[in-house]
Image 1 (cartoon, rainbow, N blue to C red):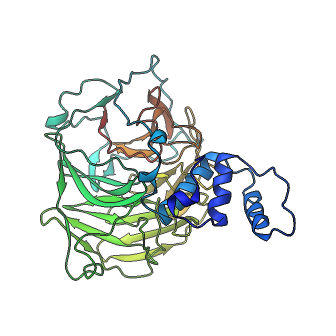
Image 2: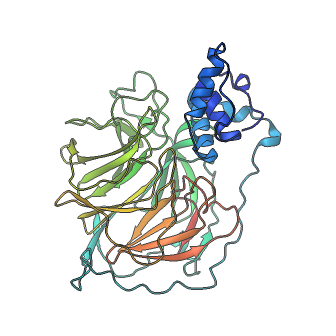
Length: 437
């Protein structure tokens, strides 16, 4: 962010800001060490030099994080001439060639590595795994096959944001919180999937909760997870301006438009954002993320939704490396799949599977074109297929939409977009108003 100095944002000229900014704008430290009589400059040089070969894009992301925490309004004061142009919808075309059909993956005995079930868990309910298309009234005009289509919506659109949570409950899609211009949000937006109309929910925080003495609104947050269960949904974890020591679980009742802080038992995980939270039966499985001190995590925790009790799981096998901004999915109510994500220096393209019965991690063999490394992507399951879209690799957005058959562990490319479009961007959720049919 060349030309933007600490004084323009009211920040102290700390070593942290200076050396991360230098890494982002100049690159690795190649300047001689300052003279011994300048301890301040020596400290800056030592800190900068300690970053080694960290990519400039990763340093820029860390620099922006620091600005967001120290001065949430920094983005609004950037000179107009360097503000990015607004994103506009463009037509996206289907790739010219269809992907090859990939044979089933076997484990040497003629059987699939993961047994193919008759049913799998999809948003908490069991459904047949055969291909099916469920189109709500407002989506009935979409006719393209395996091609992204921009939807026409009405109502007041939500502010642009990232690191928000999204979930579908009955015939509505809810969007909560996120990060807008460096400021955490607390608004709750809803899209009626029948009429494709946006509206804002006037949600309140239930009296008697820990935050109620301060405000009638829920605290702004980003990097959290929204999970639907029955006739309500939960917001789990997330970064806040004043983080707690442990994960906060909030529950939203759409009938009363009320948030409440859930009282949990057992030892809760440390607070974090960028984790994955997966509904498996009547439990929530939490993996990884980044804590309030930017320490990456690869721990595993399970919340029993019937007793609201946390269980710290010590699985066997080799777990995924610490990471955040990955995706997770459940297959056959037994297997937890983890794909991608990022650390402070790199992005991942590995696939890990946790057997929830034996609590053992594995790295199964895959087939088809192995995806490129990415973080900030989105994932959604339809039957036994797991669709992966968006994300970035510290250099550019990822343009292809992938699908993994979770029974055969075979990858294929479904669609590819060209140019700078929302589908090829980091911190992407499949709640964006584009539909792949």
